[in-house]
Image 1 (spheres, helix red, strand yellow):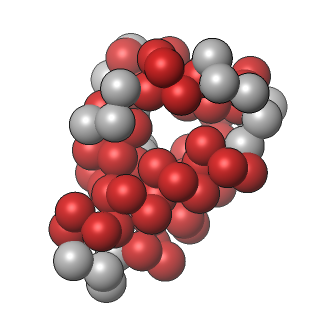
Image 2 (image 1 turned 180 degrees about the horizontal axis):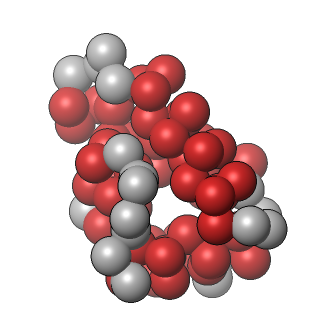
Length: 76
């Protein structure tokens, strides 16, 4: 997947949940990504965040960082 497509998709999810209270929004973004993105997409997102996450909505970065994504990536 192209990085620009991944960023666009993740940001669309974050935009949807941005009106939720902060913690709830983070949880919902994380739940959506871990439930509907395949493991290699989540891995790509994690690596992209570790490289700086340029262009990602802050809610995506917070959601994935706060929830020990390394465990979630290996679940599926």
